[in-house]
Amino acid sequence: MSYRPEFTSTPVKLTYDVNAVNESTQVSTIAIPAERPLTVYVDNRELVTLMTLGAAPEALTLGYLRNQRLVQAIEEIISIHVDWDKHAVSVTTRGGIANIEARTAKRVVTTGCGQGTMFGGLMDEVDTIILSPDARLKQSTLYKIVNKIRTQDSVYAKAGSVHGCGLFSADGELLYFIEDVGRHNAVDAIAGIMWLENINGADKVFYTTGRLTSEMVIKGAQMGMPFLISRSGTTQMGHFVAEKVNMTLLARCTGKHFLLISGKERMVYEPELLDIPLNVA
Amino acid sequence: MSYRPEFTSTPVKLTYDVNAVNESTQVSTIAIPAERPLTVYVDNRELVTLMTLGAAPEALTLGYLRNQRLVQAIEEIISIHVDWDKHAVSVTTRGGIANIEARTAKRVVTTGCGQGTMFGGLMDEVDTIILSPDARLKQSTLYKIVNKIRTQDSVYAKAGSVHGCGLFSADGELLYFIEDVGRHNAVDAIAGIMWLENINGADKVFYTTGRLTSEMVIKGAQMGMPFLISRSGTTQMGHFVAEKVNMTLLARCTGKHFLLISGKERMVYEPELLDIPLNVA
Image (cartoon, rainbow over the protein chains, first blue to last red):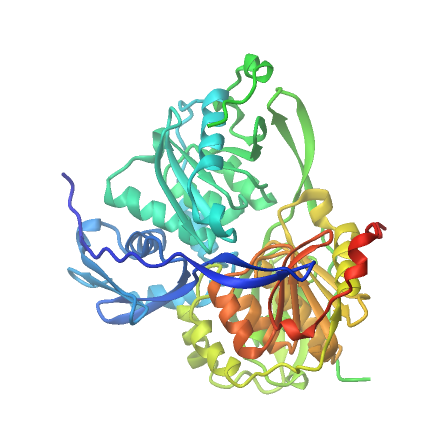
């Protein structure tokens, strides 16, 4: 049993009902996802505010600290306490975060969906990552994963307007599924769970509903994931980083369709699958 | 003729071709959007790095400074020079940005797709905004706008994986259309153009392909827009802020379908339109 910081468990409402009027002036009640600020305090110092769905605030906080490289070892963290009344999460560390001023000052230059110059620092780390060439993904496993995400009970299915991330085993079993309003939050929360549960990404498959932009690929690489799958597309820099770390990118995955963009040697094609109907759960 | 800072004009390649392999092992060349870092220097001080498509870096920089409330008057800006070789944009101001350290230190607590605690500061400003109740939008104008976006020549049509924003006149004429990898960048670039051209948002209609989250609604309100239209959905806080500033939110706009979420009194229904086929350009 690996070390675990003390966590709160703080279930909150994830969808809200509002009245909408459609093109025929018909009024209906629709569900929309929650969106709430969560301000992270580390040893009583305000660090950042994340806009989040609120499904996994403790894992999100842990993964955020990890992916920002503010905490090196999980043993440094004593507790993560969420207080939704204050829209705050308090992180207590053993020894504080060294040079937190200098290291969060760098955060001045991160912004928006691109998470700006995290890039600068992160690319240095990415230069050191080469993902294992040995992992393989069968076409049938990819279809199993895509179908599992499609049929997953989710906030997206109820309300739309959120991104989801799934961590899968090499044979396509869903291990964890997390949704959030920002695709980065969903990835950070998965990273938090992997850190907490001491899960190695090398034999896992990572699915995101979001686009495969540079920072999504970088975070996947940091988590040691050889496979990154999306129903959406990729960008020039997402492709560039994936080639650099030898990650297998699979874009536009819907039904039986997909586009293998990089790390092509890891894909195991099963042509006979195209002749049989999709297994629809 | 209003004051204009000196701008560079720096066209760059917006899509790149890569080889992809599909489910039938067929190799094809697909286009993917560019994604490049652009580091903003204000009077030689590094401020932020934006990950951008690169379609409108000067307008993006101007709009970013405006939406971050770092510059109050456009006359304060002498020039905006982009140098893609250095992935840098140099902003020269007349008197410098007052207390830039203190004001960008606050930026420490912004992050990710939610742009975190810009929220805190911005909500104070939002409390002062009430959008004009007089503006009206005809159902036929909405359909004209949705169809214009659908048929617009775009990076999205070629390569996908970008967000687009359109600024429309009250009668549905497209004034400006900007795409970027991050939906915030596209909005900021439109804000930059509006500031540069001294355009009042009060009689305009704003379209975004992105979700109507809190900060999208906040930026629309800052730009004085009574109408915010999307093919996508909204969130609890997007809805909350829209109600607060009395903004008309139209979500899920595709073909003839839409969902009127808030500011309902501004919508002018034309039921007869439902009986005739869509005008497809």
